Length: 224
Image (cartoon, rainbow, N blue to C red; front, top):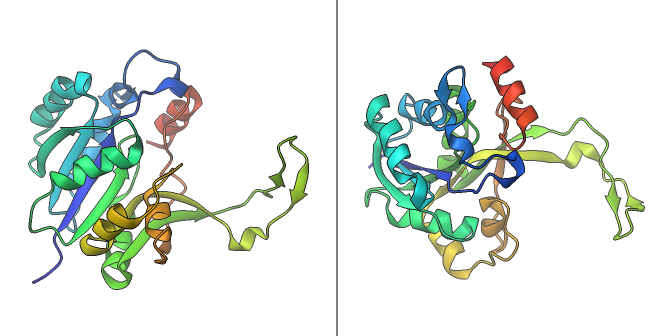
């Protein structure tokens, strides 16, 4: 049997850093909500079989309206997020099709992910069990102490800025959920790393930005 990849679109954040009183999933980019751009990338991907959207309870009706109007036939479920990212992802995992062999976990606020990058990272995850998109680091990075004094300068050739999708073999990720440490988790690779497993980084596009501040909206619109 071939791979059956279920995408879990995590769209349950409170958008506080965006400085708005609604979910950033509904901010308009070129006239269409952010979440619609994100879902379209997975709808057209020939390596994605099914999609689950994780959202805030108060956003459910609007999310479902976007799905219905957009004709997103791959979306099989909309579920509520938890109070932390790992709990939100876990809720998404539990709603996935039972045929799933791999989970592709993606930030709803990364609407510019490309067809080619989704295909590349899924392909590597099928080969290596775990893979994530990332980009080369071009700035010099400093490690500082609690007083903001520089301690050291890591070699940037060994650094990668990690993006999503992050794709994992089902059995591996379920083991990480059971046995891993989710304390302070900021991405799902950390959970898999915490049980001693390695994750392959696939170099992706720098256009695959996460919308966090108002400036990111301006950049995304210019990239579109």
